[in-house]
Image (cartoon, rainbow, N blue to C red; front, side, top):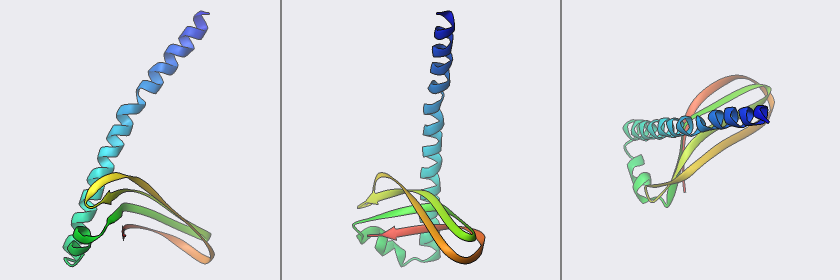
Length: 111
């Protein structure tokens, strides 16, 4: 019986540490998205119109892509409706064909 309570207590302690880490990760993603938007607008000022007039947009500050015959890409970002944050999104891509290498890039999708 004592062993069961010990396991439950250790499990509860382990799970209690998940919330702050998730919150810190979300804050980091928000900062990265804000920085990415700023960089995009600085690189091409005409994008300001898309940010203001589009129904919504998704910003992926870091999409990692790699390939060795078969390629894959993955990224996490945030989705905005009329400039207001409404959630998070993930981007996944798989490609097949002659390819080798890797890259990291930022992506904006307007809709």
